[in-house]
Image (cartoon, rainbow, N blue to C red; front, side, top):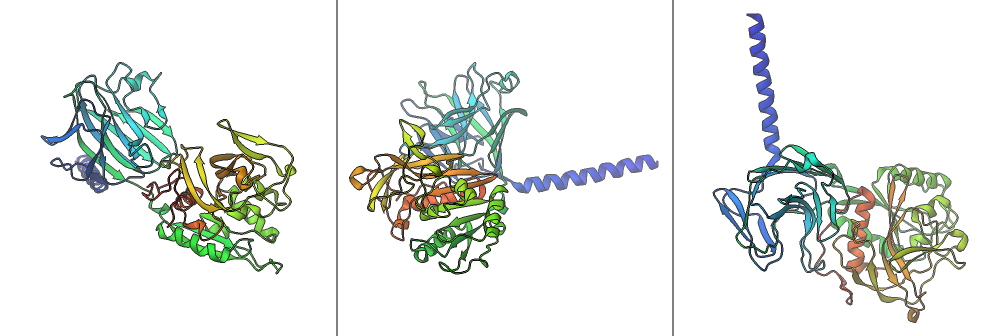
Length: 486
């Protein structure tokens, strides 16, 4: 009798716990489809038909139309997505996640990660394709168990987890893809109907639900701008940089201002460890050794650093600083400081020829050319865009270690330039830390350039967190031949 009572109590307790757990889980799930309408969705690109029939979304092929996408109006960053689909044999389809559509990228072409729906004999359902960008990122070649997971002529269940830089998929409970990729961290979800040579084929979706688990602790980024000395007008630019960051709602910003030139620096000891990212608007007297060591430790342990314009003129003799910034100018820098970085014939070239480190001609508007469209900072931006009248930094030299070149600008000899495509935007890995380096932005007028604003904000977020959630490309972004100011 006692054993029976204990068993009943155990079952009752377990059921109670399961009910509480189910209730908690239920509170996290959000239905993306109400079963009756397409409210909350918008169609992009092709003209396939999307209708609601008997509580399911039906996508039907139409002749002479490109790929069609039924997209959520809302963007999602970190999430778990589950849905079911039933697809006719011979169709190709997919589920877009963290995807986008911009005027400046292939005239609103939907692009981004796609979880494949593949009815062909190849059987790559659940693999990850990068729609309208890089192609296959995770195929199912050589993965027979994953290839068998999809079942034709029946409802299939997908589970998609996108958390941080990791994307995983399951098809009918079978693990399929496990991808690490940091190009895009947020975007819409979409249901694709692929362009087809046959009209009237259909795919159906139902039970579409999501858990939005975006990491709330990363929502507010603590930034510190360091200024106080500079051969540029830091008193005018720091307030603008601060305002730009704060207006996003992502950042809180403090400012650490050093003593004036040739004044004692012993008291200048910013607490770098309190912040997610340091924005340097400083070039001037050497910092105290303790302050230098603190920055090095901060970066080695995973800190974020942004080098803004003339900050790359600073500290020519500080070894670790020059490794952090990769390239710098003036201050006696020459071939002993490291190579020039050139972009020639589609490749990054390290040029060890003798010569100065740092130069620029007269201020003029110039074209910035994206060289790494796959990087999170540059994703979705035009290949070419005009920057406002500015100093085009050239002949920067340095260790050039662990550098990723994001964009260049051609230094026209007619503007007393080098005739080379000079680094304009780049990143550096230093220890566990991340550095974003922009040579743009001489003064307040240059900080009005929309290209500068977008890349500065994206670069600062990336340096702080390793990801970019500011993915929208504004309609007033500059074009290949037109500067855009705010």
